[in-house]
Length: 225
Image (tube, rainbow, N blue to C red; front, side, top):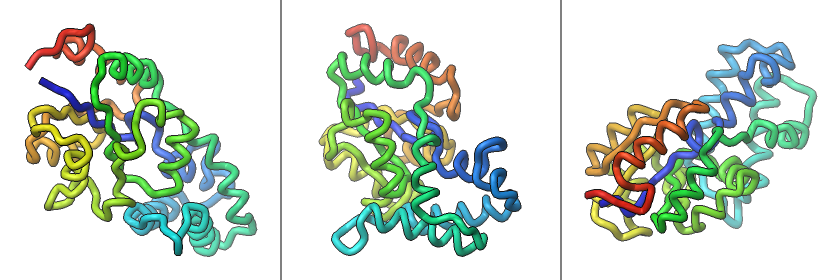
């Protein structure tokens, strides 16, 4: 019987921030400033790896981490814009995946534990939670991110998955994990969870999940083991 539904953010609840912000064909930074797409992609991945495992604290606030991120990008591509200018652009790239908010409302109505487990940096995680209103569904203690744990979902010792279990205290058979990356799905299954591969950023994804949840008895007030 599933008591806890664990969601990724990027690609499932929201569109990925950095890939669209840097690489969107019409509005992305590479297009607007005529930068080499391959170079932007590679440096974007490098920045992701550096900031996705760095937590905010008294020495590194979310704001200072975000400015550092963009100053690094500005220096790499010799741009004249300020970090604040890029920060102001960010919100337009934080967009919900269609249909996922109503689905979260239905799951919440069923009384299920809802948890986020996201490879994410501190500043985009905060923006996604606030702009998309995800605090309505996910308690602060049930938002697990790589930036706070220091490891990704594919880590050898399952640190992020263990952190989810630490805050929910259920048996492994009680968890259903939703992610758009196959490697993360594999790790969750190896950990002992049931997992569903979400069609990345798809407007059909919410309907697909709802159909599965109904078949599994998660929705409609009838749960099956």
